Image (cartoon, rainbow over all chains, first blue to last red; front, side, top):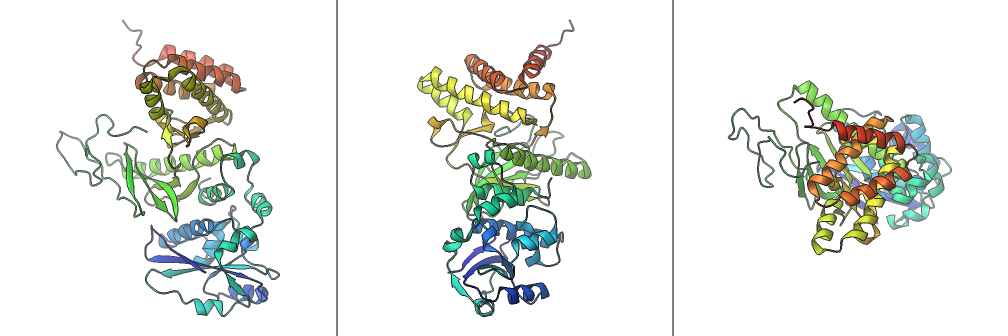
Length: 175
Length: 259
């Protein structure tokens, strides 16, 4: 159900993605995340087009953490920040983090390579149903994503929405 | 960029990644090649003067990894700055192209520490260079290449209208997506690119391509003419650009008027 990917460039880290629907305690989860008592990044799945988007964010966050150049204070905060096309941290949390009324939550965990992920820890905290990541496309709000990332109509002709999104994520600090 | 060895460069003749340190050759400094990235399915694609290019799977997707070759004859501070700037220019130009609907690879990851960039791999594509070779070889000439030239002209016109100067236009830096017959072009290798509205810069960009055509592909004068014609028709700002191109042709290189 969940998916794990070992980062090729940082083989000591693995990224695990979990998707939950019919979540009843988003408000409590968000509070816990703000307090820092959740060992994972809680993301609004409506803003996610594909798991690749998350992996790109996680890869960048781990890279920045390793060279001590994160813009936020924790790896999980950095992952959320890396998803955002803007350089405004609180805006990133607002748009990509979960809000109290959300009923679907995507959780990202990053663990040291060989350690097995303790899924029970995190799944027990969510009052909802874990579903396969294959369900993600149904939860994506394409219009919202296009608006958020300011995808141009010309751009849509030459590539997928995912291409546009990932391009902006990876080049936002270059510009 | 150039395939294989650039002139005057010492180094491995084959695809060996561990280049010889301090090899034979009077006074030449061997460049330390970058260590290949640990991507699954890794293949060395090109060992250019500026960068080593690899293909492999990155985060589950077919990607191209470009690792800059550090030039040890340069002062380290300059080298760092130059490397950084080239990387930034490439990333910026790629994004700018895409936003304007000009086909170019998507950027997946920019690593300033190792000066590498991970891009979308246009899988099963062939370079326009290879396509021209194969068409000329099979003798099916004119009409195929004419249409291709027109598409190239149109694409370059759109790129220049966005004030994007490629900086290294060659037929090896233009890809054709499969199936080739669709003439679906993709521009690559923006490492030497920059932003400019000056007709001179655009003229030089075209001149570089013209020289590349002449030197790489015999009997393609008509083709390039068709390219220019379409360029002129497609670009709103082409007049001054073509004028500058003519001027640059006259200036040229190795055209000294000193007796």
